[in-house]
Image 1 (cartoon, protein in one colour):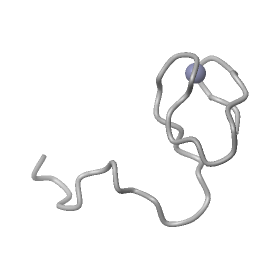
Image 2 (cartoon, helix red, strand yellow):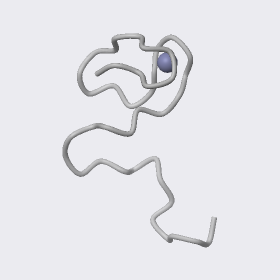
Image 3 (cartoon, rainbow, N blue to C red):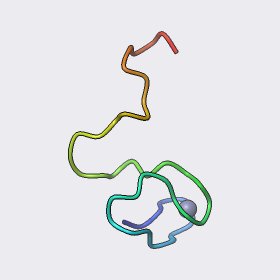
Image 4 (cartoon, rainbow, N blue to C red):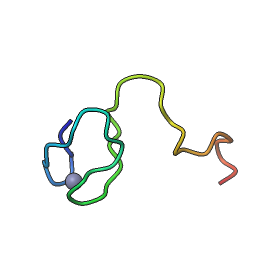
Length: 42
Ligand SMILES: [Zn+2]
Protein backbone atom coordinates (compact mmCIF):
# COMPACT_ATOMS: atom_id res chain seq x y z
CA UNK A 1 0.00 0.00 0.00
CA UNK A 2 1.22 3.41 -0.86
CA UNK A 3 1.88 5.98 1.80
CA UNK A 4 -0.36 8.98 1.32
CA UNK A 5 2.26 11.27 2.77
CA UNK A 6 5.39 10.33 0.86
CA UNK A 7 4.02 7.93 -1.78
CA UNK A 8 6.41 5.24 -0.71
CA UNK A 9 5.14 1.82 -1.73
CA UNK A 10 5.04 -0.29 1.40
CA UNK A 11 4.43 -3.98 1.61
CA UNK A 12 0.85 -5.14 1.95
CA UNK A 13 -0.07 -5.43 5.56
CA UNK A 14 2.39 -2.89 6.81
CA UNK A 15 0.79 -0.60 9.32
CA UNK A 16 3.46 2.03 9.21
CA UNK A 17 5.29 3.55 6.30
CA UNK A 18 8.81 2.23 6.13
CA UNK A 19 10.00 5.48 4.63
CA UNK A 20 8.46 8.19 6.80
CA UNK A 21 6.88 6.20 9.63
CA UNK A 22 3.37 7.52 9.09
CA UNK A 23 0.49 5.26 9.99
CA UNK A 24 -1.07 3.62 6.94
CA UNK A 25 -4.79 4.10 7.33
CA UNK A 26 -6.00 2.19 4.31
CA UNK A 27 -5.23 -1.26 5.62
CA UNK A 28 -7.95 -3.73 4.75
CA UNK A 29 -9.54 -5.72 7.46
CA UNK A 30 -10.10 -5.14 11.09
CA UNK A 31 -6.80 -4.14 12.48
CA UNK A 32 -6.70 -1.21 14.83
CA UNK A 33 -4.69 -2.77 17.61
CA UNK A 34 -2.49 0.29 17.49
CA UNK A 35 -5.44 2.51 18.15
CA UNK A 36 -6.85 3.10 21.57
CA UNK A 37 -9.79 0.78 22.11
CA UNK A 38 -11.51 3.35 24.25
CA UNK A 39 -12.28 6.18 21.92
CA UNK A 40 -11.87 9.57 23.41
CA UNK A 41 -10.05 8.50 26.53
CA UNK A 42 -6.54 8.57 25.14
ZN1 LIG B 1 5.47 7.54 4.03
